[in-house]
Structures are given as structure tokens and as C-alpha cells.
Image (cartoon, rainbow, N blue to C red; front, top):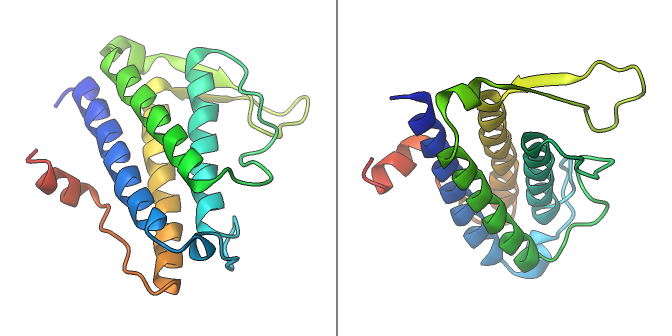
Length: 171
């Protein structure tokens, strides 16, 4: 499979995994989704917001513009329904971006400044293909934390593995 097709598939997988994760979290009582837990971002919604913020930061890198963030999360997360709406728009952007790139464009290296970097700190540099892979892996990683928090809330998290996506989408 060519890199372009693989990248598109991974963006669609990311969208699918976000959809079923948000559906599960949105099905909880609001106090469970926001309940303070011993985890990096404190609760499920703030964890999902971190994924959104990093997606947005790398979207800005892909567009060659400033992202405006001074941290990799906001101080407080938005309401869950607003975050879900924003994440759907974000996922659509990433899919359309992947669909519009050539193999040569995926190989292009993007230089960027890390969030929180001090003057003189080294810059980051990743190919567009690596950026796509990063946001897929990053989302998977943090949905795993949400899965653990769902277990803590007495809910079995949905299976968001790539083989399940491929099976359920007849790919």
C-alpha cells in the first residue's frame, strides 16, 4: 500500500477511534467524565482536550503558521459536547489534508518550535508523514489513559485497536 493510502487509512482510523471513545465518555454521568483522577490531566475530558490541543498544534505546523498555544493543554477543558464538536472538525481536517497530499508532500520536512521552548533551544523537524504518525500514536496513547479512567468508573472501554477498525469497516 502506498504511503498516501496508508496515511488516509490511519486518519480515518483516528477519527473512528475518537468517535467511539467520545460516545462512551459522553454516555457517562457528567460528574464521572470530570471526576478528578490520579492521571496526568486529572480527568477524562481534560485528557481528551490535550489530544485535541496537540492535534491543533501540529495542524498549525502543517499549515506553516503560529498555533498560539503556550502549553500542550488549556488550563480548563471546554464542555465535553463542545470538545466533541471541535474534535470532529479537527478529524475531518486531518482526513482532508491526507487526501490532498502526494508522496512527495508527505516526505517534506516541517521545522517547528516546541511548545514551551526557550530561546536557543533546538527546533523540531519531522516529515509530514511522521507528523501524521505522531498524531495517530499520540491519540492512541491518551485514549488508553481514558480507557483506564473508564475502568475506574465501572465502564468497560470500547476496543479502539486498528484490527477492530479494519474488521468493522470491511477493510
